[in-house]
Length: 81
Image (cartoon, rainbow, N blue to C red; front, side):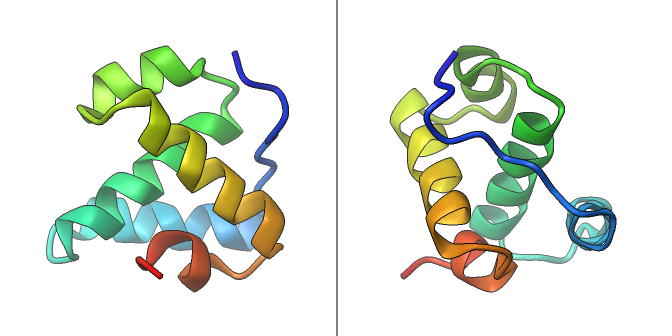
């Protein structure tokens, strides 16, 4: 488990991501990134997240890094820069 980038979501952030994931109308990339952040917040390992979301572990690492380095701005973490 990569503990360098530890994702901790505030309640509001978590609810926003859950709405995005359950909405079904969002961009697939954004939904996958939201799923990654929610799983990381639940302390699931990077490898397990990658398998369940069907992305590479490097993608999990990058999404977590963007969130942690970008602070609480979800748009920067979810939207592709």
